[in-house]
Image (cartoon, rainbow, N blue to C red; front, top):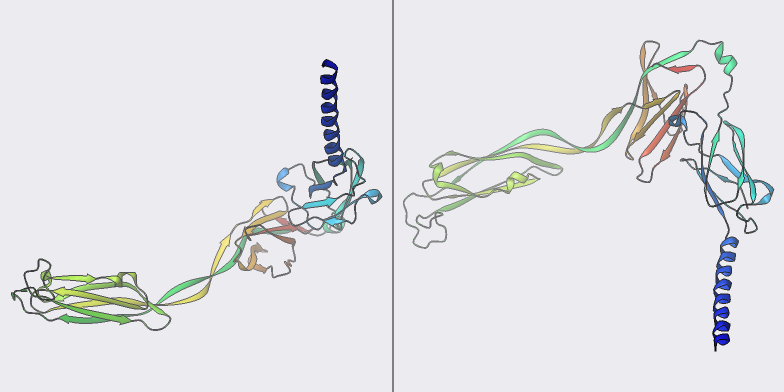
Length: 327
């Protein structure tokens, strides 16, 4: 019996080991995906800006095709199944504006951070030219918004005719305490298509006003049409309804902000609805506006834009040789 029990124990143990070996094999055979980010090499982390459109590939045909980094510098490169974890690989990064970078590492489930050195062109030629100073840089843009413009006012009087001291005797309209006969008068105003009333006021201007009461006051909410009704249980009283007339229209509202400056680089973010983006700066004693346009063209800086998940936009402008930002 003891031998038989040990026999079954060995069978179970062998099964567990075989299952574990199968899953380890499956894990090792699972294709690896190399993920990481490409940034500018700089000792100051604030200047380690993302590099977009950098070509990333692996030596020796270990991946199907090169990939390119996106606007945030992120890249993802799927390796072939034959590549084992721990196997030496060489990641190569190429971009026209940066020195080539070869990163020797091993294939693993980790993040690969590549830092590329910018290529400074025509530095000698620029050194012989006077440096152009740009100061007090601002960002200008506009956002479409619905605005209301006052185009006039409306005035209307109305009387609530009645006679005082007439018992109600269960009539259809009575005073609030049910004692005296009352009457109800109403008024309405129409501002017209595409217009609405603002700041409507209703006031008693003649007659025994203490013995009147506003029954409905939806005129406070405004809108194209406003109405009001008043109960009167004394002699005839007169009310005045006044309001401003506003016309609503979609118009551009200008905004201004300041970029964050790190060395020769300007960084700023804008709402998704921003239009007409331009940079304004002091150049040669004059304030000049430089429209960016859809192609982000500036005579004194190279600009890029990236879109965040919430559709806000991140702009980065790096000064060209021969230009300097005023501290």
